[in-house]
Length: 401
Length: 75
Image 1: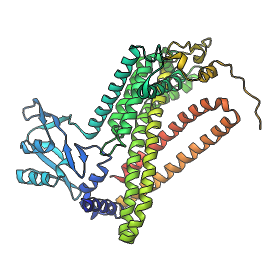
Image 2 (image 1 turned 135 degrees about the vertical axis):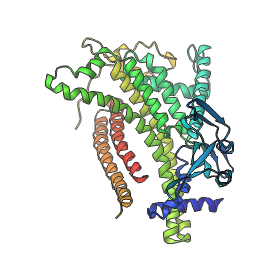
Image 3 (image 1 turned 120 degrees about the vertical axis):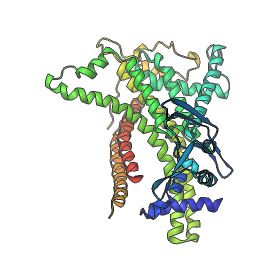
């Protein structure tokens, strides 16, 4: 199996070193490597097993009726005889139609990298389970279980009338209070409590999804643009649904006090800016999580580049710094998992805050509205410096230069 | 050079330029932010928050560029 893996790496390396038509022949093998970062219709437990996931396909048959095809595995769908398999060969798509060809593809494991095409009709939507979906659902389940258990404890009074007990509750209360006090309150202001459930859910879902990417055989659901795009869409919709009158006025009529002839320029910019902000929110999380995986593959790939260029003995030596760098990047990824969850929550809160904010000159600053109602454990909420700092009038000290 | 080779070259050069831009931007941002929080430690929390927001926005633009580079490299 090791030779198998190194052969695959050599293929990738050749792909990168000589990007010429001869290398395109191995296109489907290179997918296997990048496939660890990309989505797929299987859970990879290599070298032990590859678990294929169910396929659910909404199809339109030859008569124009919609039908649903449900199969336990991709191989099962192909063996049912209803589908042709389209695989990439020598850079061009090739359709496998006969059962023997398809069986050959299943034997070699190529069927997981091809696409299904019904013999009659066409696929309207592909609802199949994929690796990212499975780990996304797992992250959702973990988030739900933790929050339900925590809520039950607070309902019983633990943490409200007395100090929070145990590692579990203390750990999560620290993070929840952080999101509330450092993220939601300063950016949204007085109405932060309404948006706190969403922000907490987003934070913990992203955090667990990111952390699943660091578990062996796991995958980061957030390295999928569909999932991050959906999260950004939630932020967008919440911002617009709870948006204040001023927000829409600002958006559609331009900022107050600008000359009328600037408005035709500013209004499209404002509207584009609104969409770009949320698009960037999705891309940021997606690209960060994908980049970490790709950097690790690149660093491990160095061993095989050295193997080809300088020979095997040098490659053994090169594996030491390569593995050390990989460990370093994995630790950076652990940091990034937290930072990106924080950044996504922070920017979501900021965008929601920008949308729901109402401009009243005489309104007190949001910090002054802190009445401590939301405190989980007021008497145990840290040493009180955070609260003191927020209520204390800011007197700038003389700058010592 | 043929077009695929040029695309790979463009992706590599583009990734480098994006990194330079993002590095310069975040460097310009983080330097004064650190100076500011050293001069006025009680404002460090606020400075850190707004620094992270601005850094995330710079990073967002850089990642747009990187996404295009990845697309170029995987044609």
